Structures are given as structure tokens and as C-alpha cells.
Amino acid sequence: MKRLTTDNPDSILYGLNLFFGKDGEVWIRGGGPEPDYPDCTLTDWINRAAAVQGIELGADDAESLGDVMYDWLQYGVDATEGILALLHAAAVQAAEMRGRLAPIEDILGDDYDIDRLRELVEACKGLEPSEIAESKLLIATRKDLEKLARMAELMEADREGRAVVLPCKPGDTINAFRLGNEKALCVISDRVISVTTNRHGWTVKTKSKFLPIKESDGNKIAPISQYPYALADYYVGPREAAEAALKGEHDGVH
Image (cartoon, rainbow, N blue to C red; front, side, top):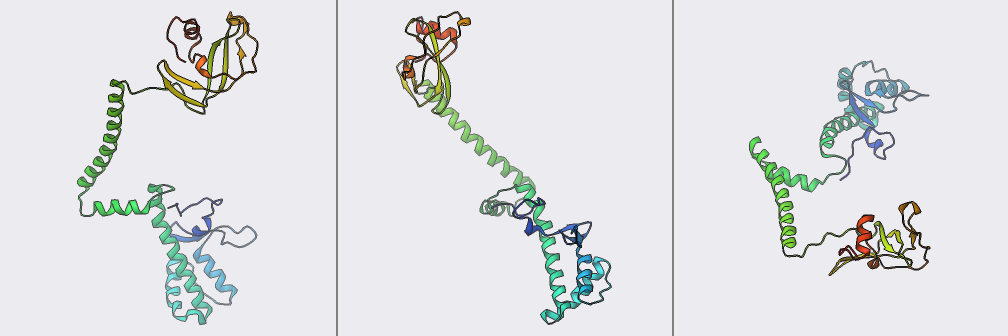
């Protein structure tokens, strides 16, 4: 459920917040006179509306206006007084309900699950404050236990040699090193297509062009190749380790 209460004039729900409470009175957004149409009190609006209809109201504060409006409700739709009284009652109701709902939604946020909230309220009925605090702790503990169970599962897999930490994932952009045709160290940078494990560690596959290392790196520049290569032929990692791995000095990463 999306939040209903708002003070943002750009919100699509702004029209549902036309009446609001301020300084102990009901206010109307844009209810003031032209040309600026400022916010105004409900008392001011009802008095101006009555004057336009030729009715002398004479209620200058919210309390006295409420007394008059309560009396006018008896007229119903047969008289202007009855219509103004009904509008007054609707405005007071809207502002009061908004005033109650807004602080609740401040706590719940912009999006909340009303069914889940109902379940929580039902579960807490009849509980003492200390018991409710314990219930919150149990909920938090349950979430922590789920995390701990997942950690234990991963640790067990690691002990059994079933856990592999991959260097990247499909969609990542990575740098990889390779010995060129003239034994020069070259680098490619491209988006990963797939990552699979093998007896060496893993195979990262992508399609890319050779990009030469700068001469300042102390290596001969290899020509740019237009051929796609599988990253199984490359070393993914730091440059120094790549040089050693590509010369067969250690297993490296393929």
C-alpha cells in the first residue's frame, strides 16, 4: 500500500490532502481569494461562501462556526445553509483523519503491507510492553539465525571443496592479460559473457580485441588483433602476477 498523506504539491495524491490541520484549525489548500489563491482557514472559506450566497453568518472563529454548522445540518440539500454545513463537516472529517494518518505513515514509510501490519497487531494484542519488546527481539534473532545458517552452509561447502569464489560475474567489465604473438604482454577489456569452473580454477569467456600495453610499461607493443578470444587464454589479476602466470611460473587464473 502506498502512502496517502503528503505535503508535496507535485504528488498525484496532493488532491487527497486538500484539507489539513494547522494551529488548531482546519485549513484549505488554495482556498483563499484570487488572484493568488493562498491557503486559508475553513472558517474564512465558509464565511466568504456564505457572503456570496447572501447569508450573514457572523461566526469569526472555528468554535462558533462549528456550533452554527451543526445547527445548519438540519436543512439538508433544500437550503444553501445545509449544503455549507455538509461541506464543513466533510472538511473537518478529512483534516482530522489526515492528521491521525500522517504520523502513522511517517513511521510506516512510503510503502507498507497492511496485511502484514494486521498480523503483527493481532500477535501483540494482550501483551505487556516488555513482552512486545521481547517479540521484536525474537523477530530480529530469527533473521540473524537465517544469516548464520547460510554462513554455516557456505563454510561447510568450503571445507568440502565445493565452494568457489568467482573473480567476476556475467555482465562485469574486466581487464585480462595475455602474451601476444611476439611474447608481448597485452590486455583486453570487455564485458563478461559467462564464468565457469574448471580444474585450474575458472574460465571467463568474452569476445574482445587485443589492446596493447603502453611502451612505458617496459613491454613490446603487440599489434591489435581483430580476432575474438576466449578468456581461458588469459590471466585475470595484477600485472606482475599475470607475467609470472603466463610464463608458467605458477598456476594462475585462466
